[in-house]
Length: 49
Image 1 (cartoon, rainbow, N blue to C red):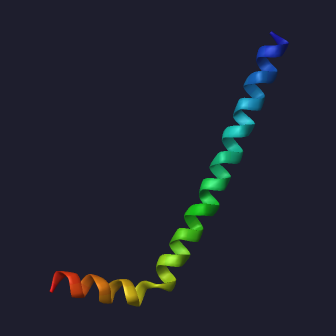
Image 2: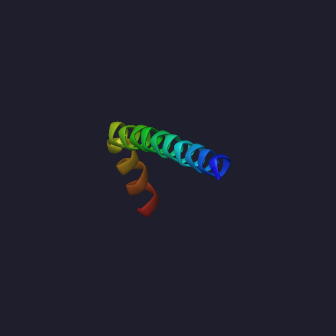
């Protein structure tokens, strides 16, 4: 039972770390889109005519 509890705890810790990394990556993507917002709008406008 002790081994199962330890394994479960390690699994939950690794999920937490993965979730934090995703959050950091998501923030980076959002910042990049905001930084390039004007160019993205121009590209979108030229595509849609």
